[in-house]
Each structure stands twice: as C-alpha cells, then as structure tokens.
Length: 145
Image (cartoon, rainbow, N blue to C red; front, top):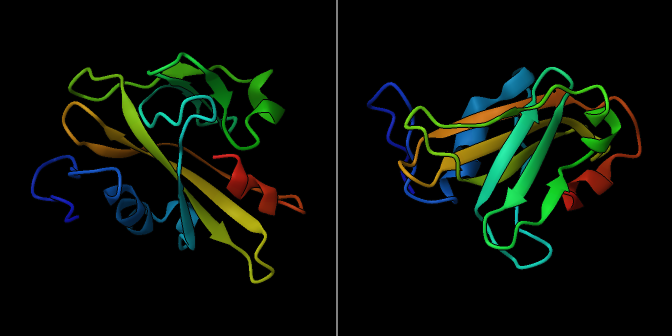
C-alpha cells in the first residue's frame, strides 16, 4: 500500500491506496476524515464505469459485473442540470475502483466530498469530482458511496 509518485501520475497497487491518495489530495483544502469504498448493492462488485459532472457535483457509477447503475451520494439533486461525461484514464481504461473521501465538520456532518478513482488497467489514481455539502443533516451521505 505504497503510492508510487515517481511518474507524472500517481499509481496505486490496490483500491486500499485510494484512502491515502484522497488524504493527500485534500480537495477544497479540507482534510479527509473518513473514506468509504464503493461497492455495488446488487452484486457487491467493486469495478465501475463512471460518468461525472464535476461542476454540478455528481457521479454516476455502473457496475461492470451486473450492469447496475447508481447515482452516488447526493448526485440525484444535481443530475437534471448536469452535463456528465464518461471518465477515462490516460491509458484509455474505463474501469475503476472507487472510494469517497469525506471531510467532516466538528459536528460530524459532511462538509466536502471527493470521489477518488483507481484505474484497474494501470493503477493510476485520481479524483473525478468533488463538491461542497452546504446542508444538514448530511451524515447519511456516508452510506451512499
């Protein structure tokens, strides 16, 4: 679980590296307090194709194993206005392991979300979208990764 930072892109050996990556990424300038790995509710799969709109704050994942599609977190709130695009790695890989980094307020409510990805083909780590949460209660979002 050591991230390779020697090249242009950071690379990880496994999905477990996403937590470390997101902690170092610190989107919005906020420390990541908790990381939750995404898994398919239908088949427990952990490999996904993604569409995202980082401007509106939304990510849709489709399980490679069973085809189940899921709007992550509170993405449904912004999806109608979103202009999502397919997420692809620089290697052209389109299948990712996904984890969500949560920055929490002192009240333990969610302040910021960062959706981290690891390309299954070459291990490149990245963040496909991140956004601020400006409502409360928001703790339920930890269950919606």
